[in-house]
Amino acid sequence: MSTIPTPAVSRALARAVRGWLDHLDVERGVARNTLVSYTRDLDRYLDYLARQGVSTPENVTEAHVSGFLADLRAGSPGRMPLSASSAARTLVAVRGLHRFLALEGRTLADPAEGVRPPKTPLRLPKAIGVDDVERLLAAASLGDTPVSMRDRALFEVLYGAGARISEAVGLDVDDLDLESGTVRLFGKGSKERIVPVGRYAREAVAAYLVRGRPALAARGKGTPALFLGTRGARLSRQTAWSALAAAGERAGLAGHLSPHTLRHSFATHLLEGGADVRVVQELLGHASVTTTQIYTMVTVARLREVYAESHPRAR
Image (cartoon, rainbow, N blue to C red; front, side, top):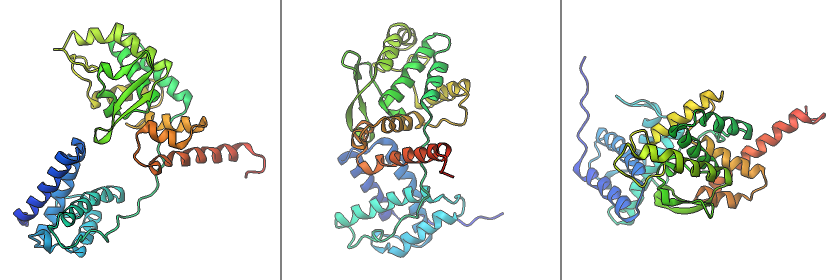
């Protein structure tokens, strides 16, 4: 079966993309994972422009950008169609590229400015109840081994500080001050924030540092990382979430956990306890309170559920 060869991407467009990515990397300090994601998204965009016969940034029109968005949703040769949310994320990279080129004076106009992302269904973040968190933490502590002590300490920090998994595995020993009860987290774009951690997390980390980490560290070459793998190196995100999945299965929570579950639960439980949304915003490290307000919808949804189940005139 013959295939239609994909036209070569023009050097001018490739240079434009490279220039924007370098700008993000060097001048704005964008996270490495974000750069990798943007690179992947823009590779697909350049392939689309090549198929349309576009060879320079100046030749790109709004119709091309809109056509690319439609191409994302419908799929193209060798590429699966994307959901509305994935297509919207890809469009972010395209819009950023063209905004940069226009601001730098490399193009006279921004062809992506008027292209709006597809509307995505509102998905409330999934949180588990306080009792479920307790069961998960208890399941992580089984065996009293260096690994189980590490897992308990890790999950306590994830839930107690609302940390992202990348922030937690990126912690060094000196980032957590057990005496003052604070932890220094480095979020997206290497933004630093200081977050309080409670007694349970401090006690779990202290136990791990005394009785768990030394045994794991002895298997490696020396690292300042707080959480270590079985070979003594910094714990990877993949291993951390494998540990979470295993503990969740033991706790009877299989299928209810995701990479952000404990962070979502942290925010939801704070708001249910009466915390101000702007305080939660600071704790989570959100740049905008709008991002945090999604959690207020979770608590309202829960209030409606309780009302419907409890009030005699609700139904």
